[in-house]
Image (cartoon, rainbow, N blue to C red; front, side, top):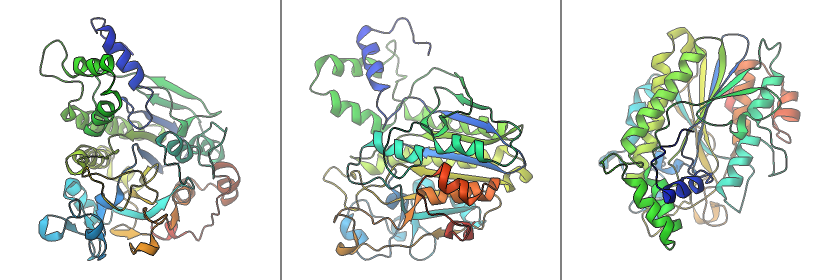
Length: 394
């Protein structure tokens, strides 16, 4: 990374510390890989634990508004009705045309096997490693999948902006590129560091210095820059997918909404919509028809809103599927309900599906990877078969 040599020493210390926070990385990584055939898969990691109950709200569940008196939105207040039970957050309304055309679905109440501790670091490791538990294995399921694709013509991958995420780490080669060096942070990331360092004067001063660069009004934390950057990365991914690459992966941050969730949710939700729509617009119609985008997060958030107008780390969450060849326009998965006795540990949405099964289904559909390889190599311990509900839904 080329860092401005005029940066004050305290700001350097701040950035060094900040880059170590898994929940709020300063860079968004893009990884691409080559595979045979015309089908394509894009995996988007939503870092920070996206609140699926806020993106797709079960407004018809009578308990929902009781748990979320300020966060719940009704169709009368702007929530976009999807099917009479679920509604789409208006911050993601740009995705509605895809829903109506059958090119978008949501997968409700899914999670990895990770439970209890609710650490971003560990949760993301389990999500990207694909195992049943947090272990010492430091390879990613998408990298292992490259080795299992029948007759692969190439296993080359490239990571744009930073070193490869765990998702693509492994024996298959990943090249690293570096693009622009301007740093931006979202509302939840800024709030995280303000809470973390407010009692440490040197770091508090570093944050203040980082917020104003050379006395200008251009800030390190300017959300308005981030959407453009996300769209640029999505456009780059789609452009590469139009060439020899068939697998792409990148991240969208900003989902750790402990406080002021309504305004904090705006930027990442806009980014997600921009990423999906940019990929669709950049690909040719034929390529889009053979493409699936799956967006996943490390865990969901608590059913109850907290006293700061946000939500805390939970378990059951939401995944997003988009693509020109899917049978979309539906919310997939079994809804567990929000009655008190149906919540996990009395606080979280009860998971009714394994996000690894969803990822396995997409690999099976797009690249004909065998069920045996999916359960024994790519997702050890997963119970997967071609009768998966997720295959029936796409």
